[in-house]
Each structure stands twice: as C-alpha cells, then as structure tokens.
Image (cartoon, rainbow, N blue to C red):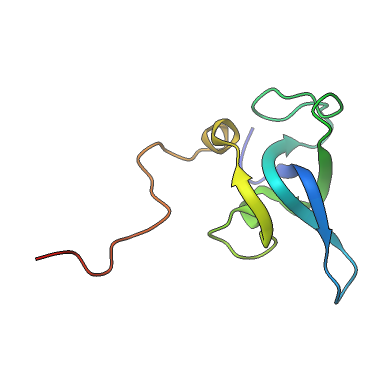
Length: 98
C-alpha cells in the first residue's frame, strides 16, 4: 500500500458549486481502490463511508488545501498507514520566544 495509490473514503461530502463535483467532508480515511475496507480496517458499508475514487489521499489532507475544505478530521491510523510519522507536525513555529 502506497500513498500514490490511495483514494479517500469519508463520513460526508460536499459539492463544489462551480463545477458540481463532490468532495470528501467530515472524517476522512485512506482507501485502496478495489477493497471493501479502509487502510485502518473499517468496513466501508458498516461504517457508512462514501468513497471518492477521484480524490487522492494527499489532496484530502488539510495542509494541502486542495479538496480538503470540508475535512474536519483525518484518521490517525490511516495517516500512519500511508507513511506519516508520529513526530511530524502540521505546523512550524515562526516566531519563537527569546
């Protein structure tokens, strides 16, 4: 499983008013196309997750800003399964205290 082949499954969706394409919202999970479960092991049907095969995993990350407008949370286990490290931070200190 690699980050390049993972798509997104999410608890909700939103539709872009400009182009009418649906994008993930709510909590997002990494999903391998052709499988019935997420990278963290959740069943798609039992968890009532919606699949977004046209949205790549990197594009659904809030740091990317691409298709992540409606994303409220990212699954920690899926993020780790796609190669994120525990000590990586989503922010950097720009003005440290003296």
